[in-house]
Image (cartoon, rainbow, N blue to C red):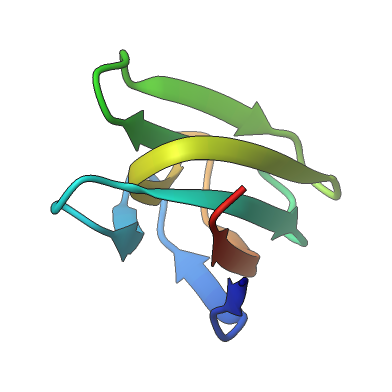
Length: 95
């Protein structure tokens, strides 16, 4: 069964980060979709159970969808290049 969390709009100043999903009790299998509508890149920071932290850079005007096993934290961080805006949506499931 999948749980689609509400789409969230982000608007981050240069160098600022914000967490959009946290499950610190063992993680969830999830799908993350990030749309970057801004003029600057945004970093998606993914933390999983027993795995290194991975950072994906999403260029301006692009999107990224990831399937992640045992997701603990999903956060976005604006790069020093400038402010970013867009949406992030997370669906959790047992897959």
